[in-house]
Image 1 (cartoon, one colour):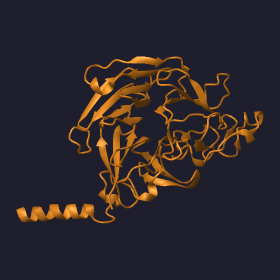
Image 2 (cartoon, helix red, strand yellow):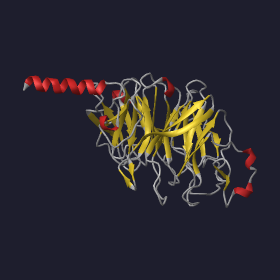
Image 3 (cartoon, rainbow, N blue to C red):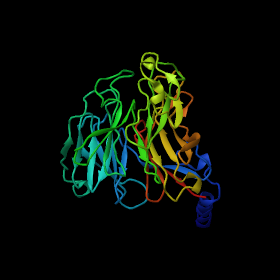
Image 4 (cartoon, rainbow, N blue to C red):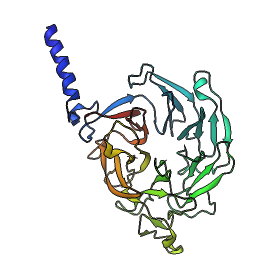
Length: 370
């Protein structure tokens, strides 16, 4: 019996590491389809409304929420890629969707303010307190939740979504991406005409900004597309509310402006896929063909007659040109039945990718082994 058990264990190990082993059946979540060699597992579960993620240099994963109002610190104490400890470091916040780290301080974006927890890792278990960095952002709650991230220029980028499905506001801050110094000073608009971005990243070679944008609703199932946009410089306008995608004039606002002045998307994404978090892949674990390419979390449609999205997609670039847009991880949508909604993507030091899911309340880890 002992010999038989040993043989079974050895067979299991050999099967796991065999070339091309990452078929659908090899995953901890076998319903998720991935390219050959990739595997998905659960990194953390029971994380209510897990949204944006930020990983510290020491390996602590900070996770935001939107509806729950909490911010968590997730700790893997024994480095087995399974979270052992979840600490609630803040609660009762107003849609704290955005988290970012700089110089040991944790920044959290609420609807109308950005707050900071100084030296957060030294105070995780000591009821950490925060200071207000800036509290004069608009109070509108429609698209009021914010994804935030520090850019290569050291500034904190803070989007302000449109306060509606489709409208033209006199307040220029709406439908924009703003940026400011870490202390909240010198707030300015970096990009205009951005309806609602909940994910952005900078190209690892050019340091130029790329971001997802959610298209408007109520024009039908198949228009307009969500967008992947490229903003190499400050001051560009990306079309909202006048132009959607590359050539769809808004029926209400399309005639009110010269659409030739607007920057067209680098890639039209699926209509109503709700493209949220995105990440340039810079790790060594995945094959070379994935280096400096874009992974996008598609949260999934909410009012389309036939659901779409609910997956992680891959956008391949050649220079600044998109050469393909394709599914990478899918299976959270079976027919019209939903089992997960990807929100954000975070790369780990070993080159694996974390994917948050605010529907299943989990964080997945995607790995590759030839």
